[in-house]
Amino acid sequence: MRLRVLAAAVLPVVLAGCGAPGGAPAPGDGGPAGDVTVLAAASLTESFTEIGRQFEAAHPGTTVRFSFAGSSQLAAQIVAGAPADVFAAASPATMRTVVDAGAAVGEPVILVRNQLVIAVPKGNPARVRTLADLARPGVTVALCAEQVPCGAAAKQVLTGVPLTPVTLEQDVKAALSKVRLGEVDAALVYRTDARAAAADVEAIEFAASAAATNDYPIAALADAPNPTGAAAFVAWARGAPALDVLTRAGFQPPVSPPSAPA
Image (cartoon, rainbow, N blue to C red; front, side, top):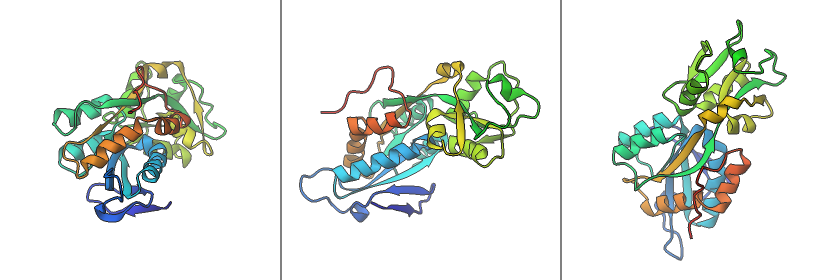
C-alpha cells in the first residue's frame, strides 16, 4: 500500500491504496473498478483512509481518492458541480444541502455519531476542567466556525458560557492543530480527533456534550463519474469491517444502526 497526493481543482486530495489507474477496468467479476472519489468530513480522515485501503484490497482494480475538509465546504463544492462519487458529512444539515440540490442518490444513511470534548495540550497548563473554565480570563480557545458542524455543535453546548474564541477555524483538524502547536489553551473538537492526537493532547469529557452529538450521513452522488464504485463504497462503509474501524476510532453507533448490506 502507498499513499499518493492528487492535485485537484477543488481541494488537496489524499489517496489511499494502489488500485488500477485512470478508470482501468478491474479483472473478473464486473464489480467496481477505477477511481472512486470520496469527499468526507475532516474528522473522518484517519478512519476513512483505513477504510479506503480495505475497500481497495477487497476490490482489485479500484483506487479510492479522498478529499477531507469541513463538511460545509465540501457540500458547497458538490452543489457547484465538483466531480465526486460519494459524500460523507459530519451533520445531517450539511448533507441536506446536497440532497435538496438533487445531488445525492436517494436518502443518505447515518453511519455513526460523534460528540465534542475539550482538547488541551499535554499537562493541561491552563488547568481547564469544565466548559466554564474556557471563559476564564487569560484562557485562549479555538472553535470551529459556526457554519461547520463542529462549530454548530459547540454553539449548542456553550449557551450561557460567555466565551470569546481567539480563532474560528474551517474544520475540526484546524482547530485541534492550534492546541497541538500550543497556540491556544483549549479547543472544542470531536472525541475521535482528540483520540487520534492523543500523543499531543488530552481530552476532557463533559456532560453537556451528549446534547450536541452529530450524526454522520453518507450518500452516493447523482452525478458520480463512477456510479458503480460509488454504490460499492457506500455499501462497504456500512459493513462490519468499516464500522469496526470507525468504532475503534471512537465513533458511536447511530440511534438506529445501519444494517450491513447482504
